[in-house]
Amino acid sequence: MLMIEIVFLNEPDKYFDEGEFIAHLPAVEGEGKLLKELSAVLKFPGYFGLNWNAVYDCLCDFHWIEKKGVVLVHRVMPILTEEKLKAYIEVLLDATKSWGIDEAHYFKVIFPIKSMPFLERILTDLKK
Image 1 (cartoon, rainbow, N blue to C red):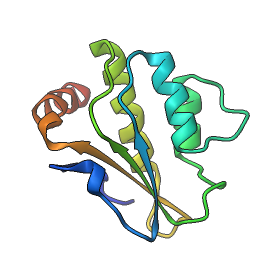
Image 2: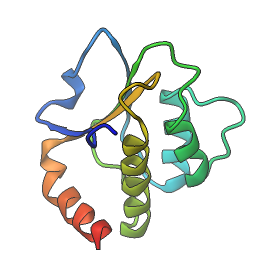
Image 3: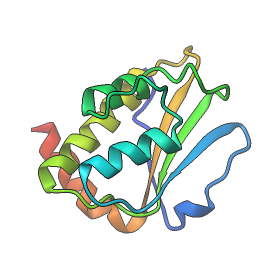
């Protein structure tokens, strides 16, 4: 298995790698808006079901993306209830863990560095 690919950057908008499909998630508020934006920026297939299970399924497939690397860049943290934010982070973590070294893709998630303390708390809670 690959290491969990969650990265914190000072300027996530400036992240670029020609060999990767980079999806920049805009500022979003609410679960429904987040699901729709994820679908749009990651070009999810038309059968995407607008729920967390469907997000996970799509994040573990990526057959529609030609480049090996798939990167989801968060300019800012989505505005969600803490419960929904934990669900979102858990889906991202599980999806990054699901990709093996020899697979067709890898999945990396980038957050702004200012969100690190908050996300570390959530990650600690998820490990309990």
